[in-house]
Amino acid sequence: MEWLGELVRQVDSSLLDEWERLRNPGAEITAEPAAAEAAPAGITQNKRAFRVQVRNALFRRVELAARRWTTPLGELDPEFGAEAWEEALDGYFAEYDEIGTDADARGPAMLMITEEPERWLVRQIFADPAGDHDWGISAEVDLAASDEEGSAVIRVQAVDQQ
Image (tube, rainbow, N blue to C red; front, side):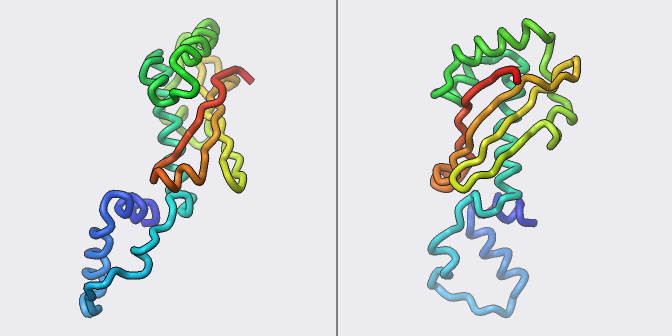
């Protein structure tokens, strides 16, 4: 329910208003906006929903890396760049034939998050065929920028073997 509420709030908060009216049909409807509407909570306030968003964003990069699509990766991560992605993936594919994208590859065990007050440090591990799990994406999630953007602001710092 929390995740759905956050998703709807991001798309159109008037849907939540209507939902509340349906749940409380006798409640008085006023023309003045509610105090909660005046200052919407940042996306990072709902940690569960925000974690899902971070996981989805990182796994999107895994899917693109599995296809060796470095141009779209460079567009997602302009500071890191397509050339850096290409160089990193050349190193990975010199060792392994593929990057897994199945349910296990997407699972919570493949994503490590260290929460700090201003940022999250994340490591999305690649599911390699040998099961070594030594390659992955290291990134920083800027919490203040994420609240401002309304979506996870991820800055890839490395794609490497650890």
